[in-house]
Amino acid sequence: MPEINQQSSTGGVEGLLSNLDTQVAGILNRALEGEDITASEATVLFETSGAEYNAMVMTADELRRRTVGDVVTYVVNRNINFTNVCIKRCGFCAFSRDYREEQGYFLPLNEIVRRAKEAWDYGATEVCVQAGLPPQMEGDLYIKLCEAIKAELPDMHIHGFSPEEVLYGSTRSKISIKEYLQRLKNAGVGSLPGTSAEVLDQELRDIISPGRIRVDQWTEVITTAHELGIPTTSTVMFGHLETNAQLADHIAYIRDIQKRTGGITEFVPLSFVASEAPMFLQKLVENVRSGPSGTDVIKVHAIARIMLNNWIPNIQASWVKEGSRVSQLLLTAGVNDLGGTLINESISTSAGAQHGQLMRPSEFRQMIRQAGRIPAERYTTYTTRRVFSDTDEEMDPLDLVGDNVEDLFGSYNMLVQMENFRFQHPKHANKEADSAPAATPSGTSG
Ligand code: SF4
Image (cartoon, rainbow, N blue to C red; front, side, top):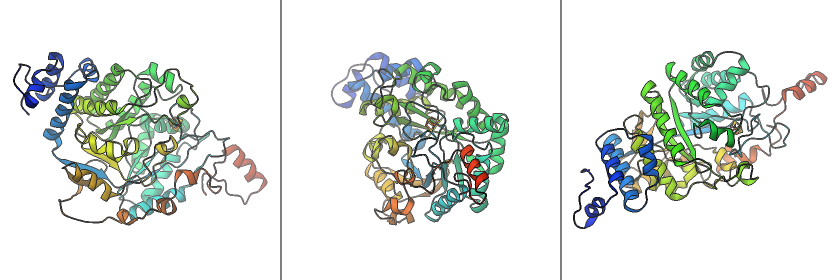
């Protein structure tokens, strides 16, 4: 792409670009020349509209093309959110339940392994394991969980345990974060989700999720994982209470970590889904927005590409949050990855998102081809499994799944209603076990 011309010229796109605000044109030109733009320059980009906004999106698209080309990737994976019971009360989270609530569930290890094996049979190469923080959790539950999956499926990639969960596991085990991560790695964890980040601004976190993992703790988990050779993703949640400056600072913070460690595989912007979120529904937080506008969604992805292009080549659109049509549009705003098939999407579904729990591989390929790009299936860490031509009509096992997805794979709504996976507090389970020795405590061993 030629440099954006700040001099006037005549007609067409050139004419449009030549009339840009000089500050915006200068920032975009610097990005096109391969320089990192600063957080305050990114804040200027967040304020753009009209021609400046369009030029910003075109710049993101061009940087994407230069860095990763026209291939758009996805991964065949399954979410296993093995419990929704959580000791925390994050204001944006509609997924979690207090242990006293009727809808608390907890999948035993054999059910988790069964789900992983089923996913493998349907072509998945990854399980994404994240959950609530159940009270009095056995400290090495996450370790045992990895060992159990790996014992059956040595080649399945375990993408699991948010920094919040790693911190919880290490606290419950009374060992350091580093030691816990090393144990997770030894047990077979392949990568960590860079979730529980929301916006890495402590003041803001104290409002939207008091008691949540702190910025310094989050950073320690992520950088220690990288130090131990465990890659992570990175995320932002936007459209709630944050300012543009906080968003820009967050992305710059992620970039700084990547400059130091090189351990981040992708950046995933996640729209705040308000409809069932307590801080919105119950008005727990003043001035909280109802989620981002469509323009906000485009801007965050485009600015993430512009800021991160030299350091994190992969910018992902979340179909779970944005739906397939907006995700497809985001392919022209800096995005080169569409995430995973998921099979059991629960977190956003419980928050009121309406985009379903499974995206079939053929649906990904169709979205990508319709956008004029080349579909490819990847592994978790962005090595390629296969690239698809224009014409192949290959079907994956998941493509052959009919409309009865819930019957086949279960769903969040089924889990919160099922009695056989009901969470039982360890204290109560122990009492019952004392009085009835033959009983198996639910929630740990099924
Ligand atoms: S976001 Fe995670 S830690 Fe916070 S309440 Fe939900 S499940 Fe618990």
